[in-house]
Structure formats: C-alpha cells, structure tokens
Image 1: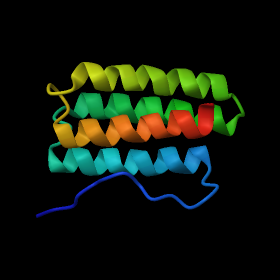
Image 2: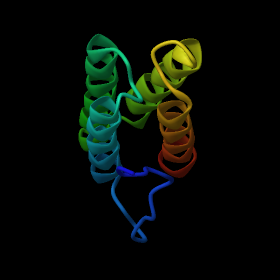
Image 3: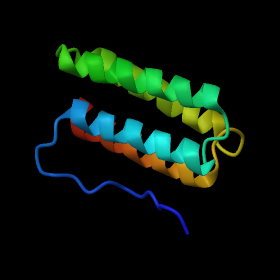
Length: 104
C-alpha cells in the first residue's frame, strides 16, 4: 500500500517554478516512504530545487539549468545508495522533463 509516485501529469503551460514546487513535494513523500534514505540528501535536493526555482523566477534560465544538471548528476551518483529505485526514477525522469521543457 501507500502512495505511488510516477511521472506527473501536467496542465498545459505549467510554470517552471510551480513544476519544481511539485517536485519538492514529491521529495517529501519519498523521504516519508523511505525511498530517499538520507535526510541530509533530501535537504540537498530541496536546496537544488529551490535554487533552480529562484533562478527561473528571476529569469535566469542558465542558472536554473546548471542547478538541475548538477542535481541530476547527484541523483545518478546516489542511485542504489541513498536513493531507492522509486526515488531514483521519480527524480531522474522529472528532472529530465524539466530540463527538456524549460531549459531548451
């Protein structure tokens, strides 16, 4: 039982900041479910998402992209260590989507 978290269905024209806020909420669920096994890593993900969100809000797409790419690299690094497969898939696919949708 418990919640399942998959790719988010998005309203057309969702704003990057709102999308990243939804991702932050999914990180919280992943922490509660034990899919992210380190609170410290959870805080790191929160910080990266916040930096990207603030960059988008101030119109700095390049800085946002840098934050998201760095987070994606960390996610790859922690796969199978601090991230169970559920959290890995969740973060990887949603980060890739954000990069393709908002940074291209």
